[in-house]
Picture 1 (cartoon, rainbow, N blue to C red):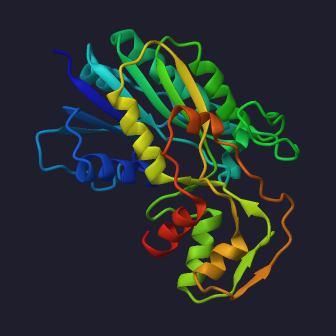
Picture 2: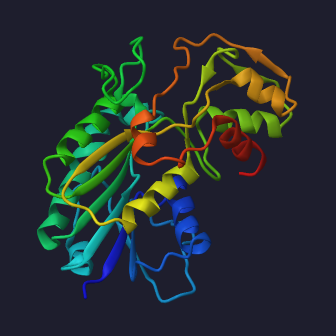
Length: 299
């Protein structure tokens, strides 16, 4: 019987760390005999398990030439499941010329090389709602107009298109702002920091309803469905956000937070349509209020 191997691409990402904790320590998944952690850094989060699952650390920099020999040796003739979260994010504007290499070409090369040695390759990946035109008035369904200027969004869209050319099962999620444990440097982590420091909170468009939250538990539960299903060769891509849009002003007031002020922000929040995902996978998505409260009060 072929071994089942899980590859976590971008193992130092907070979402990857939280996924590992959830599927192995909370849900106690026993499907995998080995886990491969891919990261460009030697300093790894403390991934550890008490059972017989073997853990490999492989250092790969998607911005440099990659030596895939060790990875291919471990994975040869196995069933391979990839959780791909590695990305060069928009905040790294000093490296914007590397967006395509890190977010598309290098991971595509890795996947193609793994496809050569395995007939059973399954990819679960995080894309971004940055693929959409920021200034379009269209509702953000999967068919909404795409960006023509945002290099980060274009690089993620290019990855989506290239993956469809490879014969494998892929499941992609276009995710807005990610909320998971210990995440930093996004809009909501800034609000949480200001709350914890008892500072006045700066927000734009406090009265506009929104649902632009990628809640980690929703992603993890979809991943669990993904690894348990039997698939034909098919590619799926969905928007993922919370349900029941609500204004930030109301969210703050429900947490008894009134110490905020409004700032100018060029792009108003928009509601992300997740009907396609909900129709295929009902009862998965968390409502916006619960996701926000969990992040602020428990994460």
